[in-house]
Length: 262
Image 1 (cartoon, one colour):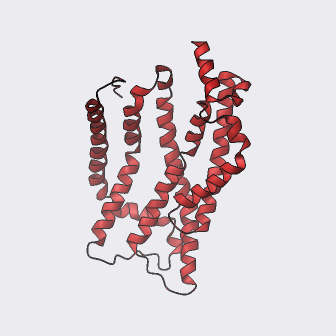
Image 2 (cartoon, helix red, strand yellow; image 1 turned 90 degrees about the vertical axis):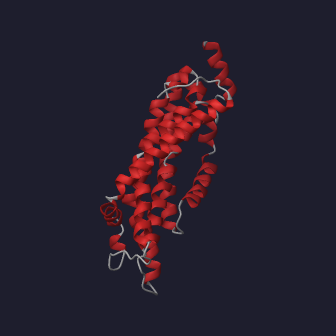
Image 3 (cartoon, helix red, strand yellow; image 1 turned 90 degrees about the horizontal axis):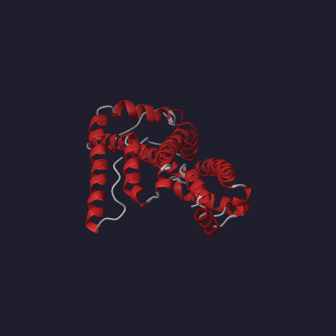
C-alpha cells in the first residue's frame, strides 16, 4: 500500500481520494461483469437456506426486465463482497498518512479483522438468520393467504440482511479501539453495561431491514456476545501493555503515559 505524505495541499488530497475511489469502483465493476454469468447458480445458493419456508420453493419474476435487473443486483452484491478486502484496504490507505509510525503496525491486523468480521457476520446471517427470519415472516402470510415468491422482493430482503449483519459485526473492532486508545475508558464500558445493552437493542432494531422480532432478537444476542468478547480482548491487551491500572485510565492519562515513555 503506497503511503503518501501526511501533509499535502487540498487538491492533492482530493486527487488521492479520487484515485482510490476509482480503484474501488473499477474493481467492483469488472468483478460484476464476470459474476453476472454465474448469477443463476448464486441465486440458487442464496435460496437454499430459505426454500423450506417457501410454498412451492420457486421464485417468480413479474416483469420483462425483472430477470436482468435481479441478476444485475445479485452480481453487484457478490462483487462488493468479493472486493471487500480491496475496499477496506484502499480506505485504510487514504487515512494511513495521518497515523503515527507506532500506530501503523495496527493497520494490517485491523484490515484482516474487518474483513474477517464482515464475512463472519454474513455467514452467521446465512445459516442462522435467513431461515428463522423468512420462516417467521412467511408464516404470518400463510395463516390467511397464499404468498407469491416475488424474486426481487425476496432477494432484496436477503441481500439487505446479509450486508446489515456484515456491518453490525464490526462492533468488536469499534469497541476494541475505543478501549485501547482510551477514547472511552474500559471501566466505563464495563460498568455501564446496562445502557450499552439497551443501545445494542436499539441498533439491532435499526440495522435489521425486516419487521421480524426474530431477526432483531438474534442480532441482539449476537452483538452482546461480540461486545463481551471485544471487552475481554481489550482488557487482556491493556493489562499486558500498560498494567492493570490502565483499565481506569482516561484519554489524558493515556497521553501522559505515552509522553513519559518517550
